[in-house]
Length: 264
Image (cartoon, rainbow, N blue to C red):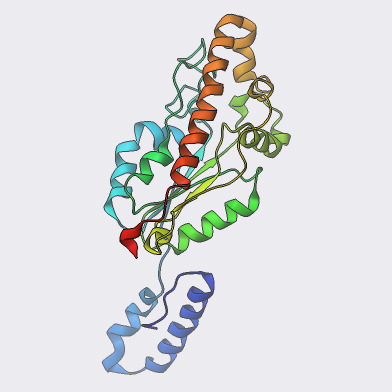
């Protein structure tokens, strides 16, 4: 019981068996009464916080940042729909450039907040960006690594939404299209790798491909701006394409940095 690392599901399953055996051996022994009432606490508990992007990026960011900075073994899953979905589709700090939403009827002029990059600056927070429809294996690895990591972790999961103005039956295909375009990045930042002298950031994929315009115009939130303000759409499209390459190059430069020699 004391030496089980409880790093993964197999370890935890074994620990449950260990505790069950312990309880069997001490049942009926008065001197073990207190231990019997507390034995279940010897199995590591998994604590997850689930929320949307409006909360994580915006109105609840202060609380989220407090959790990540605490160093506690708490995991966070952000369902990132890039809009305040539950309250009617208002613009949030997660809303991408050029998207039309309430309070951004002429297209959001600014770039999407990079929540993951901000979390990485702590150095001791596990961070991942996933899109199930684009690469399910990467998504699975992120959850397994986040659960095994002894410290705070955040997974940002791109989530298609009816507010995007798409055929929801093809939501997973749309996720893949966004990842292929480079606007949604898939990566995992694992501080445990840094302790081994390795670069903690792993970026999936070979870079943006295709025309961002085609993917934008496949969703009503961008198509509406193209219809109502063609000149404005073209300007924001150009800036959005620059955003894609700037972010890709930034993440590649971080991922290609040399190993941390101080960890050796």
